[in-house]
Image 1 (cartoon, rainbow, N blue to C red):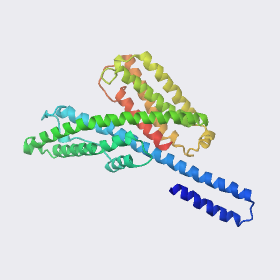
Image 2: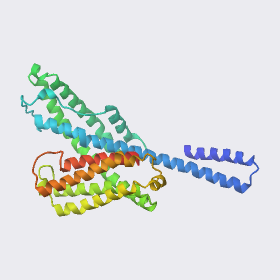
Image 3: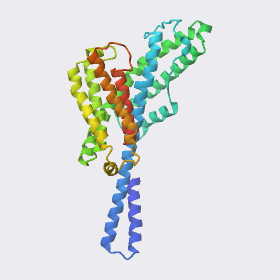
Image 4: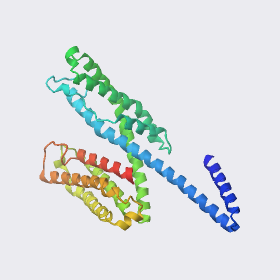
Length: 333
């Protein structure tokens, strides 16, 4: 209703203005159509911008859940056990606490997008269900962090520590299925949107944007191959190298094409990218990291390396680099 009234007012203003300027009736009609078209494009662009903002927020949320939060929880359960009853090793540097890197303001803003347009239906619903569980879990981790850093366990002989552990364990088991559903549903929505974007980029000969997105999708295909094979940091040496290399070679090919096209100043202008070209800066480094992480997995598998270093040649590290690249891609495209 607001948009329609806006168009009516604009038409009235344009007609009054043009009729007083001695132009022909045909000119009046032509100018009216041009004005209406421009306003429609503005509204369409605003809608696309809002959708993009929502994807940025949800990617940031997913990165936090599968990144810093998961890392913190892994550390906690490794130290205190992954059952309802706490298991304490008093010689395991308890005073270090439970570190959780978190920007609470940013997290709060990201969660608010569940109530904003445009709607992403079941994903928004999932975020709304996730919201209170996530905040409660973070609060419990904060309490545990303070408890151990203050060495309060020395004062009460772990009475509060046991209570906190039980709460963390139970809350995590409420939170985990919601987090997995959100990640899965959002991944599906992102891939569906990406395939549509890829078609549009190719149709318009936007080959920088095309290969930027193609690299993201290729890297996810490779990630899926690792998941299908059940490969983790513990069994990289069991990788089916031939199957891996089929998808790896496609990633390498598209990465090189992106790097080549991104040097073309005419294309940068044609695709209406920033003259300073963010793709050639942060995003370029991110996808370089993705390709390098994939190469490390291949190298480690070929050498039969069985060390348990999670930050070298592992699917876990590779997935982290993909998340970083996806965030930079959606944030600047």
